Image (cartoon, rainbow, N blue to C red; front, side):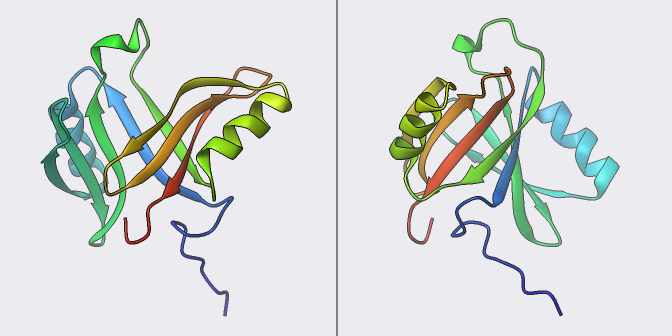
Length: 132
């Protein structure tokens, strides 16, 4: 039988998906109807954040785009677990990638950054806080 990793503690593992959209509430309604997800809504300071759960396990989030996001379309983003967000940013830049956001702390969750590879694809990284 295959052993499954703790994606929040395994560097290199995809660990979270997040939708940034124009209407997070309507998006949460759509995806819960589509996939049977449940949603736990919390206030993250910039408005409601909808934690998406599958089978009772938190697997992602849905949020309204922040005002400083600029003219971007609604989109899903993926997070990869890293041991150290700042070191990962430095390594990304040394490999020709760019830092788009961060690194920034999310209290009780961890430290994240949004990166762009040399071809233009965007991915987020997260160094999770112990117990976060």
